[in-house]
Structure formats: C-alpha cells, structure tokens
Image 1 (cartoon, rainbow, N blue to C red):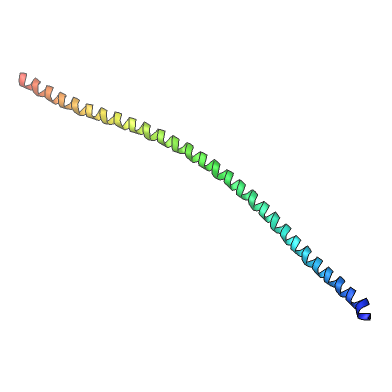
Image 2: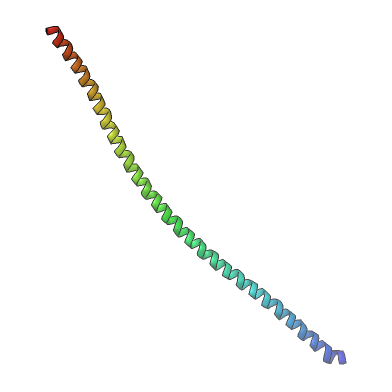
Length: 104
C-alpha cells in the first residue's frame, strides 16, 4: 500500500519530468535546425541573386565582344581591300614605268 500511495506517484512524476526534458531537448534541437535552415535559405537567395547579376554581366560582356568582333572584321576587310588596292597600284606603276622606258 505504501508503495502504491507514495512511491508510484513519485515514479510517475519522475517519468513525466524525464519525458518533458526529452521533449524540451527535441524542441530546442528542432528550433536550432529551423534557424539553420532559414540562414541557409537566405545565403542561397543571396548567392542566386549574385549569380543572376553575374549572368547579366556576362551577357553584356558577350554582346560587347560580339560588337568588337564585328568591328574588327570590318576593319580587317577594309585593310585587306586597301592592301589589294596597293598591290594593284604598284603593278600599274611598274607597267607605266615600263611603258615610259619603252617610249624613250
């Protein structure tokens, strides 16, 4: 009888306290994990924004490079045309020199 009246309620109380302590530890761990996940989510959002900005910058640089390539291609064609014209004029000059010598 003493066991049922005194010891059993104390055992039940101790068991409830132990269960409360376990649950409290679980809640604290879940809270810690939730905060960690929120922090990681923010970091990922910031990283995503940085990557999107970098992608925009790369696209702009790509456009600039394409324009420069086109400009260089135009200049190259102009220079080649000029050189071909110079060759043509040199040949013409030599031909005229030859004719001039023949006429003298």
